[in-house]
Image 1 (cartoon, rainbow, N blue to C red):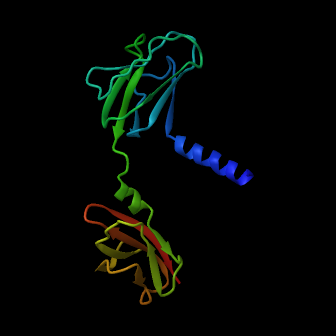
Image 2 (cartoon, one colour):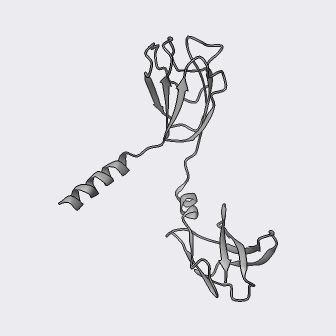
Image 3 (spheres, rainbow, N blue to C red):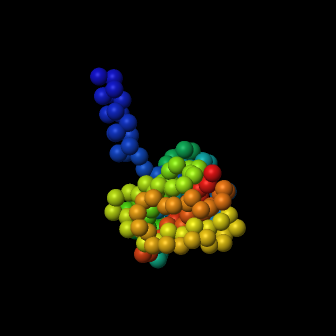
Length: 190
């Protein structure tokens, strides 16, 4: 029963987990309170002085938001961004001295996320390096570089085992390419 309860709590927490970016909101912040986030992430402004403030999107902003005016210390305004673009904003009361821009970028695509989840084993390796590749990822080429960046070998991707038996001992970089992106992983040869 305890295991089930723990699993339920952890699952519920995981479902609700979200990235929240905290910004202090008072007259000392200036006009360059800029932030770059991903689609679906939330920005939370917290009032840290007892002056009247608001958070208001400006004309040309990708999304429209307005906190209304509040005076309380520790008042919080949250907004979850859902559209890629730039969102200039100001304090509606202190229009010339408080503001910034929230830039919203695409979240990682499933393929980009999969590419980041490729792992190598064993590492360090002696003769063969095995790529653990998420399903659905279409690797095209595999390139090995020495630590100085000199290309040692480049081949089409033919399977999850890469022969490294002919390499001298040391550290290497393995660049894995799909048709539109790549990632570089480090490995050690015994």
